[in-house]
Image 1: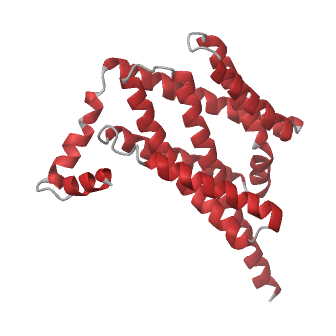
Image 2 (image 1 turned 45 degrees about the horizontal axis):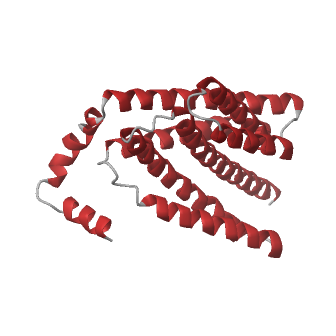
Length: 251
């Protein structure tokens, strides 16, 4: 509650609107050279992981390898990566790329469906996800240190709600309205995680935790979670529009 009250007090203070633009963007320069270098490594590694994930999806389209085994392999690579000491950078980077390839293959069926329906949907989903990720990550960077760390508790609670909803749906059967709620609420939760994880990475870097491979893995999971949900939403909307067109033609 103190975080909420301090935020609203600062936002209603005189001259707040004028100071926000300069002071917040000036926060970029408040990062030490070590933190700036760390963030460059994190986002560079993230870009390579996304390329590896795209390769995994392409391999599924060619060889039909995506499924439960690739999902388990992805989880295995992530677990192995987290168990290795940070100084074994090459091995951990290789495991991250392997996990990204397996993750790409796991979402390969969804990507293949999007290509079959309309390839532009896939492009729109990726561009939209990249823009959202960039905007929310940048917002976390220019904000004051620890300003949005309270989002972690809300996002964790939201993730728990999603888990129990999916568990209940698997037992009692899912309704369309519940599926929509899970889809949009899950998108909101993982967008919140982008902001929280970005600020957490910056805070850890200030405290000396410069494990860029682990931090890139964290942002990679956020990106994929948002991308998958945006892609499903666009596919669903496209299918509904196509059904409406068919009904109009019949009538």
